[in-house]
Amino acid sequence: MASSRLAKQFPSLFGPSRRAAWRLSLVRRALAVVAILLALHLTLGAVRPPAAAPAPATERAGPELSLPLAMPADHLLPGDTVAVYLPGRGSPVATGARISGTSQTPSGTTVARVTLRRTDVEPILRQMGDAGAGQGGFVLVAGG
Image 1 (tube, one colour):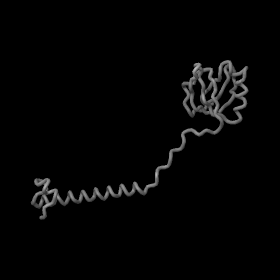
Image 2 (spheres, rainbow, N blue to C red):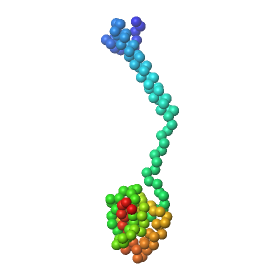
Image 3 (tube, rainbow, N blue to C red):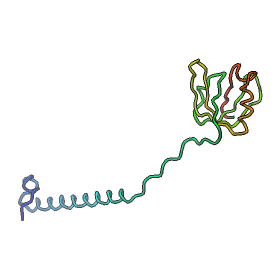
Image 4 (spheres, rainbow, N blue to C red):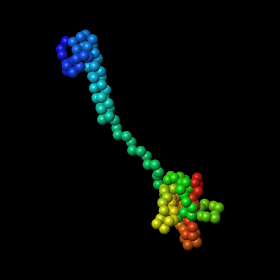
């Protein structure tokens, strides 16, 4: 039997015996199988089309307003559907609005960014006048 590099490196495993020759043939076959599988993996990775971009989490379908809040809205998460109320009133000014986020102004007031339907913008802007929400802000109720 011809001497190989493996036989020179590991003479106790792949020496001159028949059993060592059998082990050497198994190792060569295993290395060939691993090389073929690696080549297939790399080839399939190269020809596979790129993954599609993930869909945007929240779509803006309308104008976005920043509304001053009369009460904190820490319990609301971006994307939640809310109804917009004025404090002390039983009917909402707008329904089906989506909250984009909340923040605090330097003066300490809490402001919510809300995406509305176009038809709801005018009533809210009217309420933001002198006699409306300028006195205290709006209240956001989840599920509206």
